[in-house]
Image (tube, rainbow, N blue to C red; front, top):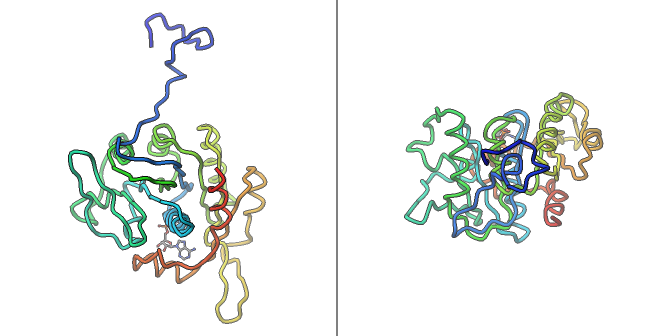
Length: 272
Ligand code: ADP
C-alpha cells in the first residue's frame, strides 16, 4: 500500500488493499487442476465420509484425485483409507500418502509421532499448516483435489478460500441441520467468498430396512429439495444411514463402498 493511499480503490491504479490477492502457489512440482472444498456447519454430520466418497467415485470414473485434510484438529481421512504410515519429505517438499486405489492424501495424522497425539495449536498455526499442505506438498498431476474442511466458518475455512484456488463447494448437512440456520450460515460464507456451491448433500437422510425394504426417515422428513431451491443449488445427493458404510469407515476400506449416491454431483464436477 502506498503512503499516499486514500483508500479509494476506484481512483487508484495500484493493485493493493481490497484488490490484493491472497492466493498461494503450489509447490513447483505439483499440478492441481480443480480444488473442491467439502464443508459442513457442524462436526459429525459425515463431511469426511462425503469427501472420501467423492474422491473414490471420481477416481473410479478415471480422474486423478487427491484429498487435503484441512481438519487439522480432528483428522479422520487416513483412518477411512486404512493409512497409518508417516509422510515422507526431502529437499523438494513433502510427499502425500497414496491409497490402495491411487488417491493421494495429506493429513496432519501423517505427520504426528502417534495418531492419538492431540493438536493443541492456536488458530493461525493451524491455518498455517493447511497452507503448507497446499504450498509444500508435492501433489502429482491431480484432476480433482477435495479439501476436507473443519466444521464451521473459522480461521481455516477463511484461509482455504483465500489461499487455494477453490473452484466450488460441496455442502454436507444432516436432516436436522437442514431445518436450522447452520446451512444458511455456510451458504452465506460461500457467497461472501464468491465461490459457487456445486452440490448439497443430505447425509443420514433415510434408512432402508433390509428386512421389509421400507424406507424410514429416522431424523425427520427430508428438507433437501426445499433447501436446494431456497439457496439455488442445482445438484443434490441423499445418502442413507448405511451400517456397511460405517463399518467400512471403521476398518479403513472406504474404497470398497458400493452406492451411486454421488453420481449427479460427480457429473456436475466433470462439467466445470
Ligand atoms: P464429520 O467429518 O462431519 O465430523 P464423519 O464423516 O467423520 O463426520 O462421520 C462421523 C461418523 O459417522 C463416522 O464414523 C462415519 O462412519 C459415520 N457415518 C457418517 N455418515 C454415515 C452414514 N450415512 N451411514 C453410516 N455411518 C455414517
